[in-house]
Image (tube, rainbow, N blue to C red):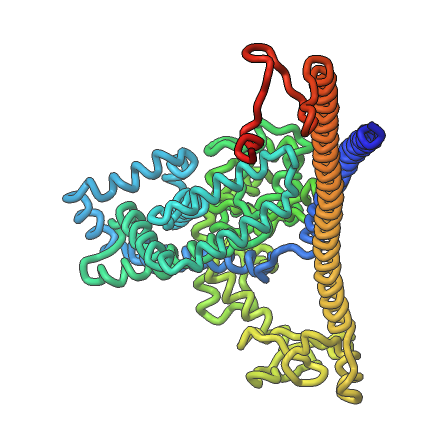
Length: 609
């Protein structure tokens, strides 16, 4: 009984230990949940830090804004050269133009294609009929075509169906709200994704198919320009001078981590006064944002501040007309902050306007403007470049007058002649260090960077070497004396490299800290689980031992009960024997006679007897 009580006490103690362990297990679960929440918070902090690192060190393709500006300007000049190459005979040679028009009468469907394209661009259709506007209209049509088919759509990756998917993903990324993505991260992802797409082995094949398709579509519109003798050259020129450069710019825009886009002034209507829908104060601001070319003055640059007689706002409202837009403006917007950056205009929108200053100033010239242009061209060819004069009053014209009245070719020759005369009169003459061309330069300037107009390369006029891009002239002198000298640009580059290395190390430290925290959390969880399992195992062993001890106690109690019962039964048997039986006189064995004779004989006694 004493051992059974001890077993019960031990069992009760084990039960209390088990309950305590259960409470500790619940507490550990709460601690684990808290650690999990803390881990998630640390992960979010790591992601935020990585995002900040991306903002500090964004993806870059080394495609600068100046390169984008130069590429777009080169494309526009290439299109202009192509138009002049294939339309000069139509505009200058009357016999050829008449023969060409007669041949088109037999194939009206050819010119109908251009007419359909003009119908989809109302401002270009309304510009038809202005004097000397044919080349400008064709130029504007080609620019509209590449904007619609290349920059405004997916030009040549339809076979991969990848560019559309990337565009959809980019659109959804900009709409994310939980969490909201930085625009810089979106554009960095976009640039890397398109860079991978353009590097795909199948893209070159799709690109060539796109070039062929776009060239064929453009030929379909302007096929009336080529002649049967140079059909292959016409097709090749469209592909090499228009489609391929446009596609190269499109790919560079897509690779960039900045947003390049084209924009036109939607607030002005073709064939109407530019200012009819504008308050007077906004008109001059609009004109400053546009590159206006005056169709009345042979497409000369139109600037209000350059006019001799300054017009009032009311005069501008009544005498300035908008003809058409020749090419859209190129703008760029960076996204190095959450709210982005203000857009920068890399190239202004070029528009064709009509402005007649003679009518505005109340004069009624007796010589038409076309005659003035022809007269100036004749004077320039006769060697009178220094004495270009008005055919009406013989007054010498100024530089601005020649720019306003002369044809572009005549003005270009006049400008070149003026520059040459200025160089001749200049005493500070230097020679280009790269091509030995004589140039004018101010030798008193602190910096000697000079652009040679002959070879179009930069050199240092102070040291007569190619321009040292990483050094100023003073720094270059120090470098010549001490080759170990570093310029400010080099020091800044070293600092940027050091900052990049520090950012990389910081990112690695953050990653290592996160890994160590995760590992320690896992080890703590495993140790806690091991302790719980050990306690549970000890409790289970104690319970089994208590059960075995209780079983043995029950067996002992049962054996004791049986033994006591047997003793009692034996005692009863002995009492009964003594009460009803008599001992044998000889051997004293108890005997009981209940039937038969009064005598008893024993076998073994008889055998003995």
